[in-house]
Image 1: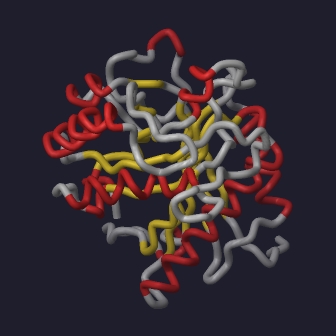
Image 2: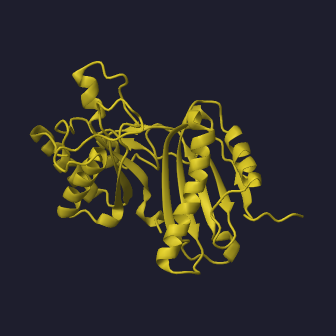
Image 3: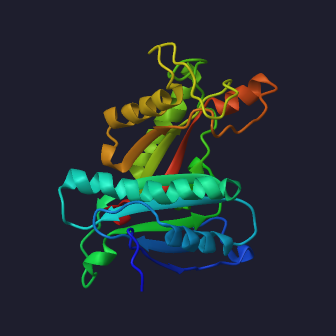
Length: 281
């Protein structure tokens, strides 16, 4: 047997569900799941690992694009900071490969470095150096669904009437009651771990972010997400339940932007469910 520089055991157990049987008002389970294991201190993929990921992707149902949740882990050796960085690099190596090879099968992708794998009984050290790869159907949910708990990993909560001032990271005055409503719901549904995702309009280039006239920087979407995050923290939502990220113009809801309404749809912040807090490291 030839051992490559990046010794990866990739075993993949696919759990394919009939699309017709998926509940539309309940938290969804992964459509498919696989795990990639790494040697100590290794985070890059070698050709054999890439071939196995291709096999995993090719076995997904031919039903369009999917959401991906990619979680990286490390073993307990090394410092906390080192393991956090290493686990994220491992997750990113898988994510970048999928983005490069299968962009047409990808709707959304979430990449997190979770640091050290939570302690488990009888889990070999080699299996703690892992990346968990999960695929989900794209689903948009409402705040009502969040109130009822009818949401699951990678679901997107549509925040209607939450609009921003053009070129700024501040909300329009009429959107403040919507933010207060979100605050109340998150205080009630304390079990969810979420991402606050910021977006912009009017850029035209999918690889770019907007210009923030308040900060004089080209990271408007990130500032919008951070503004919502900061408001929620100030008003009692635990910061450990949330992350925030700006996506620039990479995920417009309306394209091309033919009307002011189209621009308003893209000038937004969304809430994405990462998972439940009891599943978080």
